[in-house]
Image (cartoon, rainbow, N blue to C red; front, side, top):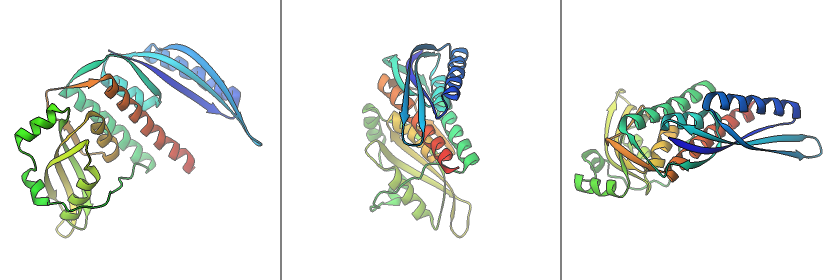
Length: 258
């Protein structure tokens, strides 16, 4: 079980509407999650032309499993503090299913509103593509990464570009950092002239980055290659806040575009 405190905020320039929406939120969270409202705070921001009313509630909520917790983060975009547990062990099936939930949620958002996250390329460096096609690390080195907390993950991405080389180099460049280690790449091209196909990657990453890959890159498939993984309280909290923040950021971008 995962227990959290979540700060939820309702803001607007009509006090009665803010009050009504906050009451609806409280009822919804109580009915859906048996949430406990711990306290309520109010604020008024005022300038020459407008008043903004804000109502903030702190809720205590229990979740039976990790997937329910992530679904909450996707839907309600709260500021989250995880109270318990200190650690949680998840079977591969559960973590893979939850990664799928994240990918589907963000992909649906992108399809509906035509807005998502841009993947910025760092300064390109020399990349030996053949080295990655063969596999950069041997099994002994991979075990060492896993002992340091890295999780072995298989991911499949869609790629479009002038050539296979360009697509591979761009993908590796965007992924490559201390927390993500790319080991091996396989490609399948469906275009005779340019590259329009799939890139399968064997990589190792930390738990937070695994979810970052899910919502930013929207891979065709993403799965852990270990029977069971362990997340710390900090992992659970950071992942939840990242997912909440990312969905809020996209939602805000849609509102500002109107």
